[in-house]
Image (cartoon, rainbow, N blue to C red; front, side):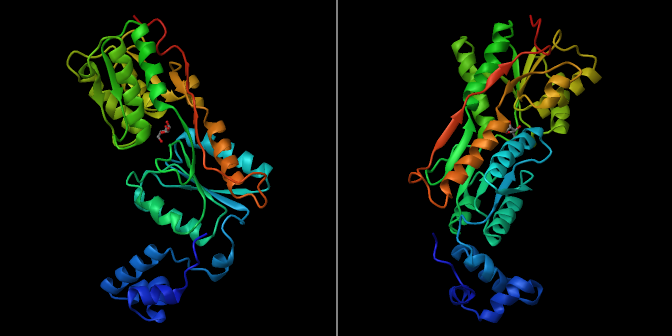
Length: 340
Ligand code: RIB
């Protein structure tokens, strides 16, 4: 566990008085910008935790665990939270759910909040792809489990789904339905999930003897219904329009479905659609959506169980970090049935 850092350590590191550090924390407006920045850098670098009582709490002993999701508006994360909360509750632990809203700055602020509160540990779907936020968080000596993401460096557990396999399931289903002109409505390309799904599609195209550039790519800034509607409009404007579209998640697919319906384009007759996650609304859509199902509730439950194992008071066996990878499955519905 990281040696706990005191306010005097921060003052010494920043070359200021303890009073100045206290002002930076409690009255930042009273401190000159340069001094405030220097003190804040020292706080982040040393992993200083404000509250004395929180500092005393041994990491891993709190009865609250943090869950930081990428997008609270996405039912996928609601299911992840449901699984985590049930598993934590069975061990008498509560879950504090926060939302990074795909914003690295907000992710950093919530990780600082969890550190201040000395939560038992944190379940996190990272939005900061640089890894800087997690690196800063590690200094607090609080365990974390990556959710929906494989931990590149093995200093934490992770639970994810094989998104390369998932992208391949979607593409092979469309290829088997006779489609060779396929579009991919992706999210932000820097997100691992989006990149892996695309890799799965390209692998399936290659197996079918199709070149990567036959895939018509429509990137989006966000992974929500509005971004799907926008992508649907761009899809409709493509010369030599594809006959099928795979979307990086169900919210995008529902937005594309809305745009196609508004334009009088029939699904699946004129355009087949495949989504990803298999959220509850996929089956309830006006044209029930074929989707690559992620076991979201299981994902959340397993992440919570890994964290509980890592922070157990008297573990039955010494903890070893694990990278658990679950498999997706294809759920076929009317949005691709009868594809040519
Ligand atoms: O957060 C964006 C997407 O990544 C979700 O829809 C889910 O698919 C996750 O893996």
